[in-house]
Length: 149
Image 1 (cartoon, rainbow, N blue to C red):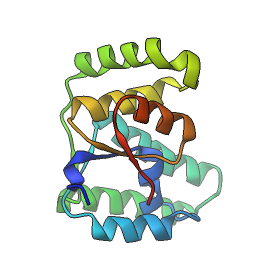
Image 2: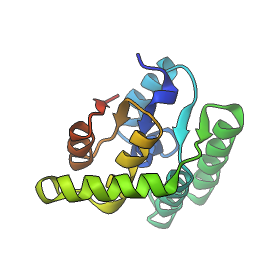
Image 3: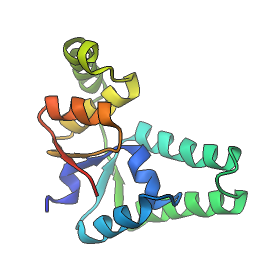
Image 4: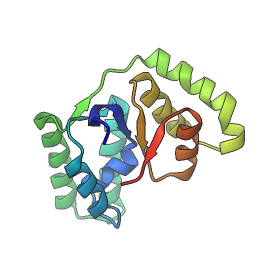
């Protein structure tokens, strides 16, 4: 298995650790086997926090469960299970524009999905975890290996 610091996890997939769903069991089992800290960009962290807050808004989880999920996220960052990765934003945005120009007409990816793939490339990741088919297609086209826990 690749070192965790070379695996980019789309925040919607990472959410499985904090808001439990049908994918959580297999994702948690995979995470237990993956050694090291997973990178999380600052905007990925915002997306993950917002996703947890939306789960509360939509009543998928209770307010208490949402607070516990956010506390668990913060604890994982403090414990070094996740690290907030510095990103060269201009490079990531330029790479995003290039990926979009070359691939979105055929693949149909959304802006944030493209930005996550570009971020993985800029961070030097080799593997990409997502449950989104279009994002996975773009990541493959960009040379990343898809991992499905």
